[in-house]
Length: 330
Image (cartoon, rainbow, N blue to C red):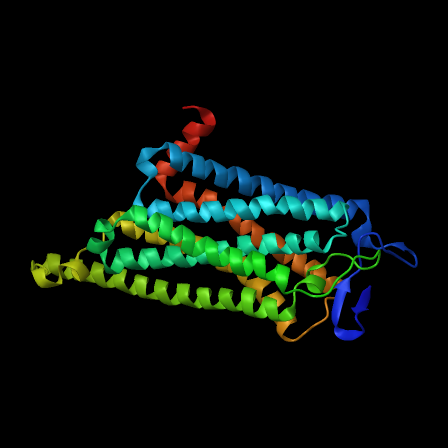
């Protein structure tokens, strides 16, 4: 059921769970549908929270894991954990209609800020890998503690401002009625979705792809250079030591791990972001089918945060051993 808001053609939203059709409840109002939705949300939430919390605790307790590379990956685990916790709000809203404008905005601003933080964290992680590959000596001599606090502020300050605060001061007019439920498309303005959700995602994704293309090319160059050096027994000139210092196998392996994380990120996030961007830019109405497609793509987005702890465990032996010890006790 599509209901126009304020008499305009493009401002539509989905009917609330309490509204019934002429022949009884819609399928999305049935108990079975709600149970399936809650089960999907709850399963993903438990995996996200348990997995990422375990990674963070393991990192904090095992000194060996507190390396320069891992310190940035832990940022991603924190962002994923925040995204996992906000799913609780989504579950509650399925059964309890949000009648307050503040609570309705909060429902989507929490999702927005956690998504913004995940996005920025991956961009920062890519920049860190770029610096480690192109300037290995400077990378190993920089003050990691300054980076720690600086990067934390760089990630969460804009995420809080653009993802959390702006929706509270720039949103659509909405008041709760039995047929006017708290829905994504009736709270967030299309311009907000375009400029503060879609555009930052596109810019960061393009930056990640460009930087990682350069990283891969540089790693290949250095491998070829090392092979040629071994064949001709020619040493690297001293005056080019920083740029031509061989990249350690540990850095290369971590680059591959980050590449895998970012590949999964793109697979899980791009469909959802494209979907909401197209609807916002073209001012498309959210039909019943469109809302259900968006829901499924949202679940796929959340699955990404559940996958990352498994990637850490599979790709990092020290993490795997520490997590196994924490879970089994030996």
